[in-house]
Length: 163
Length: 164
Image (cartoon, rainbow over all chains, first blue to last red; front, side, top):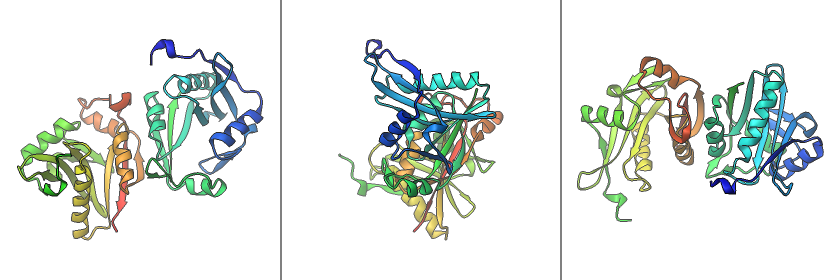
């Protein structure tokens, strides 16, 4: 990507959980997220949004933390390969460090090679597999496809990075 | 598409020196760990695919483990021509013939092509072995850390396909 095409991004704390709920409805099949069998609602997470020069929201990261751990709940960007995801991740890592968290975790699904590449490139390492853990999520969110990229969507793969 | 898949012949690869050299060159050396045990190329079995001119098209290595055969390396020398699938099917046929109910495969954490390829062909991820490649590296310091896509090689991912 040529630098001239890199948008000027501003990364901002999201103050209102309605924005998160709306985003999740659009991108995640419903107003809540289920990770490793736990349900997270918009009020229970922190978030950063990426805005372009026109103040359009072009990406959102949500995360939560307690004790030693921080965890990414969702990460989406409207455009690929122009640094939105990286900027949102960097903001989250910095905030989690500031909170004194020792580890940042994230789960993705077994079909998501883009996420496995994205996080591993940035120093995350695979740490756990939750087999067949998507089935209960699909019960709550029937719109989750059975297959993606020609692969059955079934498992959660967890990655972590030490902060 | 000049290649005819029907002309392929798959047979056991008997030339051990060739095999060890081939695997060492195309992969990271001469050993992998599966379930914590170090398996050397010389202890692997191999199938090779040739065309009717005896040109080598691909190689699959495998070992017996538990209730099945585990594919350790799979190389197609002509991408996109179905050789990988044909070799997998040949290993599956062997496993079936020996009374096994599944075949497995191991892939390094940076090998997203393999994760995609195998999952598209009926394999399911059954285990991740965090740090398994780091453990091999302790014994073989020449094993590089830098893998594909700018990803460090650390872990082994195990997939299995149930034979029907």
